[in-house]
Length: 514
Image 1 (cartoon, one colour):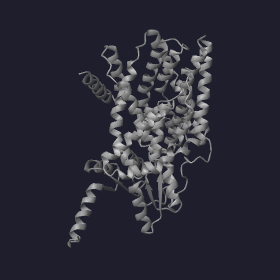
Image 2: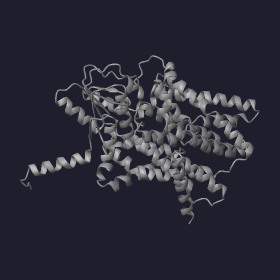
Image 3: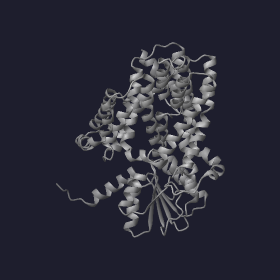
Image 4: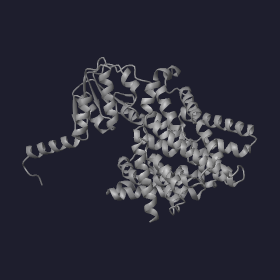
């Protein structure tokens, strides 16, 4: 009965949030507070289920992560400087308020961390996790997690065991885990292997005094690069989402704040724009374009769920009063509720401010620069996944002058090594589509996975006056009609076309072969 109450509350609140154009997670947060307010008994092992959700989330991130991305200039400069500035501001504020400076400093550093759960969900949902700025955001989050481990150890008076450093050798097990994944022929076995490795990494990390999610991330890295990782990540998606509902519900289980604590929590929420501005300025300083700096800053403009853990440890150690636990709980929940809808409309928000924001860009040779020349190319393929590469190769085989465009730096690196002509560009970036030099281009193949991106890209290309051919893919007849209405000349439905080709092949070869 208790399980039904909690799950039903999450469902109803999630549906209500969706009706109000908020992401469902805002409803889950509200449901947690409501259940706590009405003194509904907590669901047994809710916190444990939430931990599993975070481990599965970080494991799927590890499947796509390259370790060297942590050493990028913008990761170390933006992530490091932001932590330092926030810690300094926090210490000054608590000193001015005559509060306990040590506890305030730890709390301030904790509040400089961004929500890993929300950021990764936003980037995954928008398809930008593998984009250049998406990888930078992810790497900054991992850097924050590493600092958080040391911070929590200091607050609790504990230290990771000497063997903790050995966790970073886990990716060396890649040949073994790759063989295991290859040996799992059925989808069920692949899914079971993924869950097993995620939980094993978490247990191993906890045994050496490190956060379980770091262990799950590292075991995910052991499978990175395997041909089946995309299918595995897709299989884990539903399970991960279900467990993460428990994470958002449990935030409401801490004590509800009184009037004074509520006011302090609102003051902390009022400081969120400062955090966003700080990230935006630091990203620009590191050389990113205004669009990518804006989107990245918006993703990171939250308070981290880790602040809840750190605050509990600080309060327990007597470094801050008990009331801070309720304050931080509300501030974290509020920041997630604010950031989720803002990130949903990040592209329109930037478009509205673009003329003003691009004034702050500085000239640099950063890889996210817009391409100013496509050479002598007459055909452009946007999105170099399986469909895009097939279209590119077909055009190249016909001796057509073709260039590919993709937002994933690892994809570009691989394709350039194969001798293909490709450039960096994000199809979600309205500036890219507005400024691409298309004078020579006869036709564009749009092969990005997101229907929303394909639709908006076609609309923008036609509005800027592009008269060439546009071809893309649609999942069904309804999608195909919508894309054609936006201005697409050709829309292929892959499954429908596959059926036609199969029928042609089988009727064209009537001789049975055994």
